[in-house]
Image (cartoon, rainbow, N blue to C red):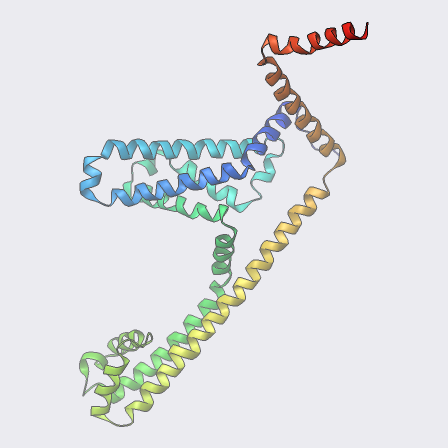
Amino acid sequence: MNQPTQAGPGRRRLAVHCRRIAEDPSFGMAVFAVILINAGLMGAETYSGLADAHRQVLQLAENGCLTLFTLEMLLRLGAYADRPKAFFRDPWNIFDLLIVASAFLPFLRENTTVLRLLRLARVLRTARFLPHLRILLLAVGRSLPGTASFLFVGALVLYVYAMVGWVCFAQSDPGHYGSIGRAMLTLFLLTTLDGLTDAVRAGLEISRFSIVYYASYALLASFVLVNVLIGVVLNSLDEAREMEEAEARARERAANDMDPADEVRDRIVAARLALDDLEASLSRIPATAKALPDRKQERQLESAR
């Protein structure tokens, strides 16, 4: 059986050096700040007067943000130089790579609308640096199946009540219940309870039993179904939090269960980098400072004699 190819010392050295920078909290805060600046630039471009007056400045700032994003991605790729396949196991790495690389594709750069949407997608990269936001996005994704079931039930309730409203109020209030489409639109707007008072008042002029119609609809659509949706989202949020904690524990176990040989190699590379930094710092010390210990030893010898 063929053994996997071990990364060379140069690649290990590069990976350790890049990983040290990429995992630094200040590096993450700097990238987060660039993402916010990029979002601010997009907002500034929506003002036509400001965009026309400072078009070159905004373009230079956009190119600067793109350059920083590219350098960040190269640095993250370098952090996986000793294990390239591990880079693509993280969905956030793939997302970041696609967003940054898409800015260099010719047919995308020529389409202004698509390019602006891709620039807008960079704002979503803030979830990488905000764990709670990452959990919320994961919860939204996991709640989609339950939300689809909720939408089906809600549409069914809306259709039934719209048919009843069309039968009861079509002749008296054709502007709101003249067709099934108008009735569904009216009831959909009443889901937020906005305008319910006016609808009940108009219904009472037609029949006293309309209060039962509107009260039952408000109770079912605005309270029961909305609470069901909230329950689905909260359940998905708990599942997303558990998944995030499980992934964190898995990464911690993977770090603890590292191959002893790989761990020793990483320590050797880190020690070499530290020695190189120490040697570089010693080379910057003036010659007079180096001669001070020798003079001190001479004085001690003279006193001993």
